[in-house]
Length: 192
Picture 1 (tube, rainbow, N blue to C red):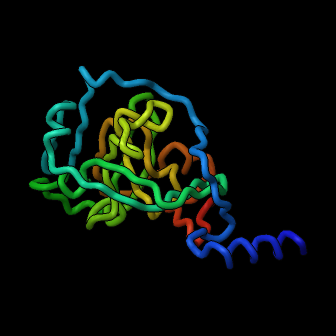
Picture 2: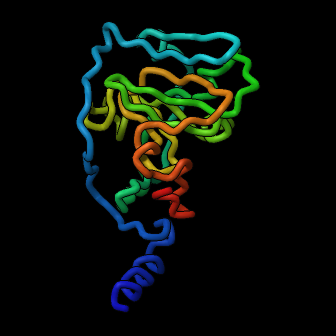
């Protein structure tokens, strides 16, 4: 039971780590993807009643927020006290009405992930363009990625292109391959 002893010891020394996670000081890159050109980049948010879109310059002109928080990858690493800057998803949905309860985030390159709308709104999610004071690198989803830090990081879609609300929940890319539909790291919602 040495593994349990080691795990218990790590949890005692750092209660910020969810179950089954280890502390990571680097920033692992686990996926490759497109490198969207900000000259033609466009972010879209759509509901059943309307849609909005922003060019890169329009997006940067929106109210900006600085967030310091921990991030947790389903592959078991966590990075604590990370610093991000971007736009609240609440700001993006401001003025758009919806009765729908779910959303699909889609990325340049075709990646998708589904989320309950309650996990995107209410000060819980952002679209981030800056990490640790620098423009978000392409390998980490730059120029902009969805950021939902209370869920495993696969829900924070890299290279975000748009968010569409849905009347009925549908699985996204990894959810179709056996990942948990929700992804709460404190409940270890890793796989279905």
